[in-house]
Amino acid sequence: MKKLLQPIDNAPLILFRIFFGFLFAAETFGAILTGWVKDNFITPKFTFSHIGFEWLQPLPEAGMYLYFVAMGILSIAVMVGYKYRASIIALTMLWFGVYLMQKTSYNNHYYLLLLISALMCIMPAHAYASFDAKSNPSLRSNTMPQWCSFVFIAQISIVYFFATAAKFYPDWLDGTFTKNLLAHATGIDFIDRLFAQKWFYMFIAYAGIAFDGLIVPMLLFKKTRTLAVCLSLVFHIFNSIVLQIGIFPYFALSFAVFFYPPELVRKRFFKKKTPIADGEKHYSIYPPLFVLLAVYFLVQLLLPVRHWFIPGDVLYTEEGHRLSWRMMLRSRSGYTAFRVVDKKTQEDLHYSIFQNLTFKQIRGMEAKPDMIWQLAQRIKNNYASQGIDVAVYVDSHVSVNQKQAVTLIDPKVDLAAVKWNYFGHDSWVNTHFEAPKYP
Image (cartoon, rainbow, N blue to C red; front, top):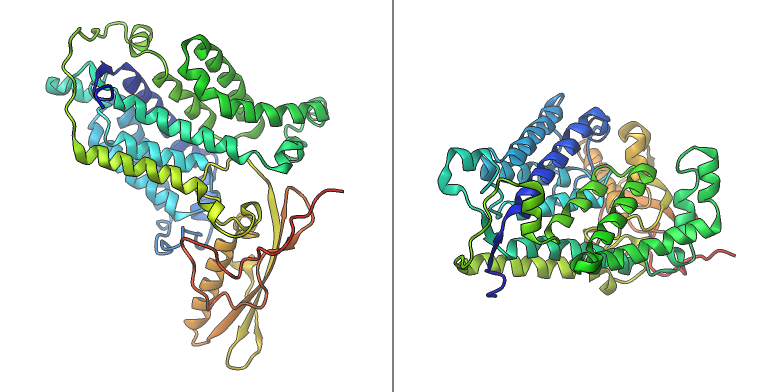
């Protein structure tokens, strides 16, 4: 505890604030420019919100564009340290709304952005090189408690640890997933031929395990730290170019600042910054904050292992998949057909998902039990508004890593009549199949 409260130079946190604000602005403005906002919030008639937040739907017309512009402006305010505390809290709340509002385009880095935004709300990241510190000298400080760096190191360590553990399954170890992932990845013939070579996709598979498993230990040790940063640059830039996964590679790189000695960061990036004096007084303990952080990290350790306590293979059932750092781990495809029956007349009724969902939503929903259940509830409510009580049956099949499709959902269960199990297994999700294997 004494070490965690030791004062250190706050240069890493200040530099991270600048990176963080810039990347968040790139994410929000980029979402508008690339059409992501239009595809996920403007075009759809409704969004697949996280269960329990179905009431959280996009703002009408140009509202979502203004919403993202507001986040972009707040991101810049965070970057330059202008009204920092209010800006980061507002940005976190708005991003939390975006995160809960749709999961058709779910991505792990959206979750990581949310977590880091929440942590930044309690950080003294505006104490130097900020408009706040310039306008209010009493805020200015050259130090921070060491726990500020520890929190970010612990968080990124959790991400990489569980990303490593998740890769130890047959389709990763035999190169099946990386082979499928890299097939026709670039559209450039000679590069795609290289990617199709067994030695190459097997190298990528095991390099992925090695990188995720060793990068944090290498960053922690002085002798391997610079090599780790160089490897990170190669790894993340390769992912950025080939996989096109937005800001995540650069966001992951930004955490490296917390692994270097704070004095070194100060000398490299803030040459005019005053070094901290010897004998600086240790920071005091604020018990509620430490309790809050302890609970936070306990939850971060428990969420990624919850699928071990849920029946079935998470690769197929999806139960316990989200919030578990199971990143770029498998491909899923599926087929889902809805049968709507009038309970009174027992007649089949017509409901066209093609008229009510976008193509992207259909692709995102197929083979996802939670989204299928949500659509069944929406269908039920749609007909209930017309005075018709219906049952909704689903014929759904899922294929993982391009293998033979298997039945995902019990076709005899009326999904309109069942409740969602938030913390465990839903009995109508099939767990009794043997995962098919390649010949």
